Length: 115
Image (tube, rainbow, N blue to C red; front, side, top):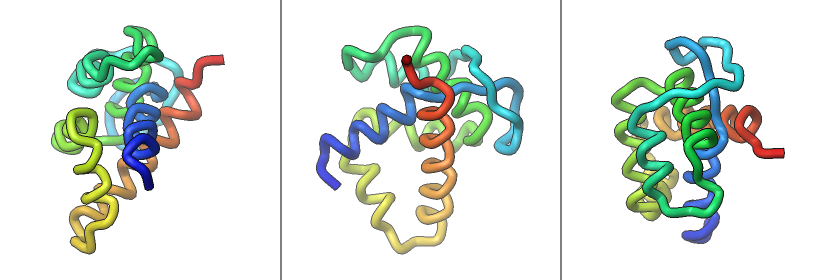
C-alpha cells in the first residue's frame, strides 16, 4: 500500500464517518461531534477537510472506537507510515485494533461521503 493510499485510507476514515451516542456497537447515523479525530482531521491540511466532514468522522469514531483507540488513530494523521506498521504487525493487539479501525473507516466512508 503506497503512502498516499495509506494516508487516503486514514483521511478517508477520518473524513467520512458519523454516529450518535456511545459504544462501538451503537447504530450510526449522520451526526457531528468534536474530539481528537475531528481535530486531527482538520489539522491534516487536506482540501476536502472541513468542520462538517471532520465532525462526521469524529461521530463515527465515537461509535466505533474507544477513547484510547481514537488517540491511537490520531497518530495515523501525523505519521501515515505508522498506520502501515500497525496494519502489517503480527501482534494480536495490533491485529484487533486494525480490525476495529477498518470498521471505523468503512462506517465513515459510508456515512460521511460527500455527494
